[in-house]
Length: 96
Image (cartoon, rainbow, N blue to C red; front, side, top):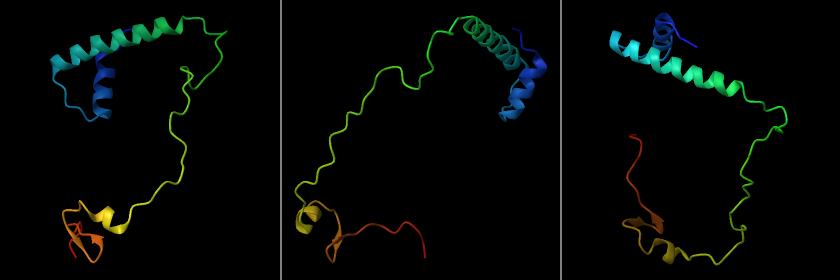
């Protein structure tokens, strides 16, 4: 399926791309090739393939959320580069 130069220019404008005439020609050939591959895929018979959202049988691999031993305030602040009044001290993010 060949795509026209005007269609490539239209897509480039929508994508806010400034393409030269040489780039337009390259994109025209590449997009036409992509559309040809898509046309080939549309010919594949998938009528007996059930719709699915996950094809790998992936299951959750996370560990169970179990409450464990908590850190004391001193342990939590032990490696803090800067602390004040029992809290982490960080640089201001917003100017006031």
